[in-house]
Image (cartoon, rainbow, N blue to C red; front, side, top):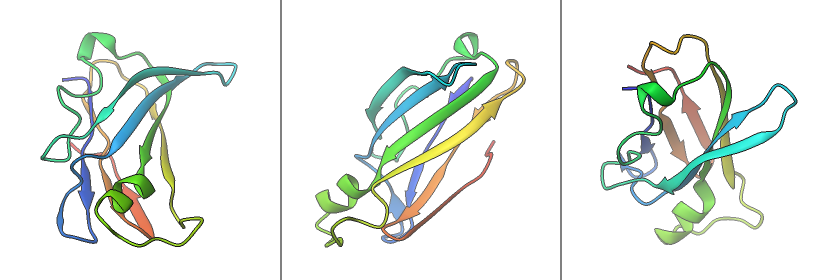
Length: 117
């Protein structure tokens, strides 16, 4: 399956539908290469996943979620500047044959992630 993600809006107890994200590969020199951008679907998932198994390569990645824009679109009043604007999850892929799932559980003032299945 490759690389997948989903967002859970813990402030409202529902999937984080409609959140913009961008996936980057980080080169050995630290340069960021944008691989995929999109908007989470109604279930809070990246439609079709982020990367297919054959697209996976070992190395460092960043997955950036536009959290403040998402909560503002829902009508949530945020301070200016917001406590969380863009959340960046930095992670590594070490075995290209494995599936990697990187979820984001988020509210306007906190987030968590883990390696899912």
